[in-house]
Each structure stands twice: as C-alpha cells, then as structure tokens.
Image (cartoon, rainbow, N blue to C red; front, side, top):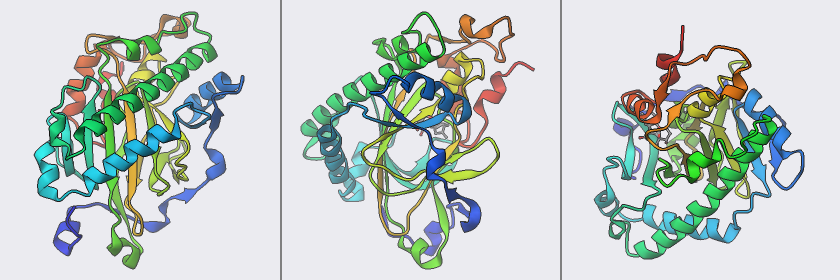
Length: 324
Ligand code: GA4
C-alpha cells in the first residue's frame, strides 16, 4: 500500500479520539472445553452478538503458517498484488470495500471455500498458500460447526445440527477474508483515529475472526457505545451474523463492528464467514417462535446476498426485510 499523503488521507473517515474505551472484562469468554460453554454462548449471543473463544482446537501451527504466507503476499509490490485483483467477487482489493463507495485503510484478499481461484496469481508460494488455506479453513469450519451445535443445544433445539448443516452443505456459500491494515504513522503523530474497516454487520450466519496482537477491532453495544476489543492472537472472536439474527427471530443480535487503523503496528486478521447455500430460505426456526409472529419477511440467502451487495457498509441491511 502506498505511503499516506495528505491527498490520499482525505477520502478516509476520521473519528474522535475520546469515543471508545476498552472494557476487557465486558467481552464474554467461552472455553469450548467446559460444560457451561453452551449456556455462555447463548447469553453472549443475546447480549452482544459477540464473544471470544479459547480452547478452540485450531492448531496454532496452522494459524501462524498461514499468517506468514499471507504477510508474504501483502509485502509484494502493489502491481504484483493487483494481478490477483480486483475482488470481483474474489481476489485482492485495496482501500475500496464493496462496490458502493466505501473505503478504508486496508488491503485484503477475498476467497471462497470452493478453491476455484487461479492460485498462481497469489505470488511465488501459491501452492503452499493454497494448502495452508485449505487446512485452516477445514479446522475453522469445524470449530464454527461445533459452536453452532452448542448454540442449538443451549437454545434447547432438538435438531442439534439445524445451523451447522448449512455450513457443512457442499453448497455452503462461505467466504474467507484476510485483511491487512498497514501501520499509519501520521495517526501516531496527530493522535487521530482513522477507519480501517467501517462499521457494519456481517450478512452471513456466523463469523470467526483471528488476528495478530494489534488492536483495532471495536464492537457496538446496545447502549450506543463502542468498545475496543483487546487483541488476543491465541483466541478467536465470534460474531453473530444477520442470518442467525433472523433464524432466531431477533433473539440473537448481529453485532455492529468496525476496525480502526493503528499508528504504530500493522494488523492482520483472517475471517471465516459461514454462510448457507444460496437457495436456503432464511426464516426463524419454528421451535423458537413460541406462537410469536416472524419479525422478518421470507427471503433466501441469494436474495439477501444480492441486496447486501447493493448496499453501503454501514447500512441496516435487515431493515428492508423486517415486517412492519
Ligand atoms: C461484510 C462482511 C464480509 O467481509 C463481506 C463484505 C462485502 C465485501 O467486502 O464485498 C460487503 C460487506 C461484507 C457488506 C455490504 C457490502 C458487501 C462490502 C459492502 C459494502 C465479504 C460480506 O459478505 O459482506
């Protein structure tokens, strides 16, 4: 990414410094190896739509090897990286997010789980990168399914795989994203905050994020405040997505989140977005309705995804699908 100059910074959004504080103790931590995991997951999804997971079972070795390969890719000259872009819908992207004018202090790779990409575009080590990515995605998808099954149990749903089967389906429309936020030295000098990735909710069912030890992630609480999530490179952070909000008829809330650029250190995050097959109807589960009406109109993941891609990052995408 080119170094920051006045002209390039002007398109980015700044936010006031006083806005977010860190409340490390607020963020729920779920130990997947403990019997109370299912209850803690349900509570966290109801209150925050967000939690941190420890004892997740993804080997650290697999994580750090993939991270190293991703960093090698991002350290290539821009013209090399751009050979793997633009992300239409998959590939390398820089600064522009989506197609509707959002920008951030970020470069990224968007990939899907079907490995249909021409990996030779991802630098000299593309074969290694492909293998590492494959095994990482398998482990993370397994963790996502374990979490979704604990969730179903915690919600006392009889069919334990009611959510996880959507990710296990070979047609599952899941996405993988690697975000690289270069350090932005001007911020360190000016003491300002700049948006790396603007506020949004994830449209899918569930997202699993792992980052290096650089801060930046913030989540939005129901009381209208933003809190900074202390980074932890040994753990995963889980977001409830819009589709899970609908399937639980609003009992779980998709979490609004954003990432701020860092003045001193670069941040690298890898996110798995677990999505259903395109033809899947996204509707509240009958066992969670208890005689209540659905809060949402009926739609398929294909319809929701289409509407998502026509929206701006910060839009309330579910708003169009709410029953009035
Ligand atoms: C947010 C979650 C995922 O990163 C993503 C993003 C997608 C993109 O980068 O192309 C979107 C965004 C995300 C939601 C609104 C639209 C689409 C950018 C954007 C402005 C890959 C996804 O599925 O939705």
